[in-house]
Length: 165
Length: 402
Image (cartoon, rainbow over all chains, first blue to last red; front, top):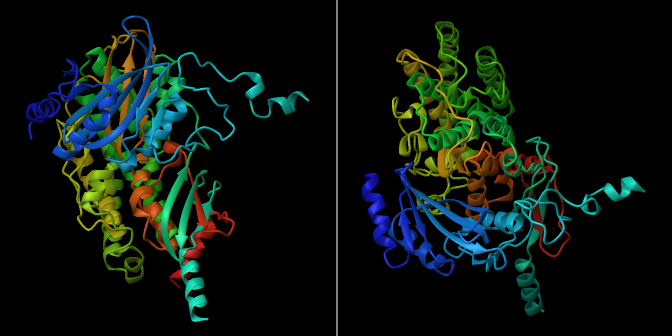
């Protein structure tokens, strides 16, 4: 299928669900679909129902909104042939809650665990909440991919206390 | 009495055991931990724990300039360092609106295919070793040395050869390179045909691989498997074809697929891909465009976002890069090529298979610990979980088939 045709299909799928749909100037094979966080499951189901789209990854990033408010940008990257479709939304720093997409795509568990650990996102109904990447004794409430994170306080560094004794 | 026996028998049948393996992992020389839940010999569940060699590369990338990050991401993985560099720098080049000279694009493709050759040969040896085929392991690693010598002689290093620089490449394909590499390619082609013949005909090898670890087309498609793992289930998915990058639009490559979906198919797809890579390198060398190797890149990359994929030897390597207009990237997200295939193993492939087949099934996806960083635990139900080394699991598998 041609790129334009696939992008048009995405636009048709998300008519009524998306807040806005953009095709970036620097990447003609990509379509960014901005949605409300509450519509995530509906949006993922709609895409999976229509074509053989596969989930590439789930990305999160720490950013600032137009009004200067801190936000976490969430991107669910999907692809089919040459087109990348990104479902995107923003979560306020003080309410980082989103539904798990594992009931629709079971293999998303790895990406969701990463987002929970690195950005402290509360992914509800995700099947496995255990640590994937960080050490078991990593302190609660510290998320290393926040822009404000510059390192653990000395008291939290494993072996540091013993070294000082 | 018989009621009691039946009850006890039913209770025993319901017992599940967890067999933990790792995190020390002698076969792959990298730390990982897996947990297999088994009922008897059959695996009914599997889980993974990563992070033993997590190095915070994504965080580190936010405090280095674009050129430094290029060298940093090449160190995510020693096996597919060129793929990481290519995926990252492609994002920077696209954001800067820089178009590579055709010769540089061709050089990147040649380096990428040489990398595929050494990665697939390394995998062939590891996978063979997991099945107890140590002669095949030694043969394939001996042949891999030829590829490593090519990399060292012409690109300056066995791993982390850094062919890419921002806006081009630093190595040229000279007549000396062509003359030096051609006999090696002929030899490797001959060896690959030998391996293909062996995999198709050796009775013991076929017993350990045919109809083992099957993934159907639908499972593979819905779980997002990539690379040779997906193509061995008949999925027509290859980034070099679907979203051609660098020179793959100037010099197209054809797909290699197999629709059987078992472990044997994964061997065949990878070996045929090696043959395809050899053919491709010869073709590009014969038709390499004249011209410059680099073009000018700005130090500051304009603000924006780019998402790039590269067909690394293990599958789709994905980079999402955000620039805020400064000399350093704002966010670099890396989805490594085998991470999605680990998800495939955990969600689907491991379940329903014999514990004895696990070493070869796991090796079949070409796992990379540097990429993703992981472990295996085998649960024996209400008995305390036993932690097995990878070597123990491998020996258990090989003894099972004796």
